[in-house]
Image (cartoon, rainbow, N blue to C red; front, side, top):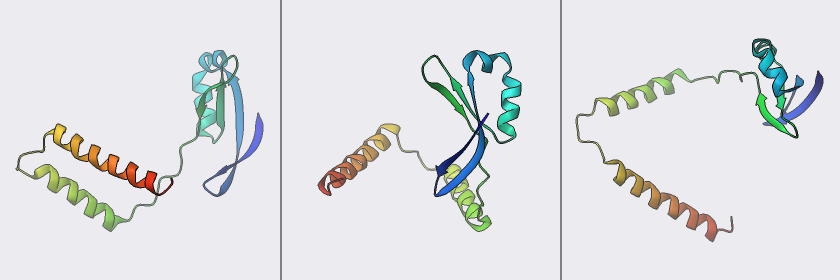
Length: 111
């Protein structure tokens, strides 16, 4: 087990890092998950490189109850709307045009 400090969103997280082979991971996957649940980062390595990275779950984001209620109401209103839906080809075409316009705008601004 090797300790490491890795930059993440402006913070430095310090967590144990475990490097194991694919064979070792398959042999006792339950124990591997126990390490992840305990806060370890696990790198599963193949012959020449990493093939998987297991990370402990991030903390749940703080949700503003008022925004959550508003968002849920908006979703429910859309689900309850008896009007005709928009055909998927029309939606795809609309957002395809928006993506193309955004790419042109980015290209015109040099990036």
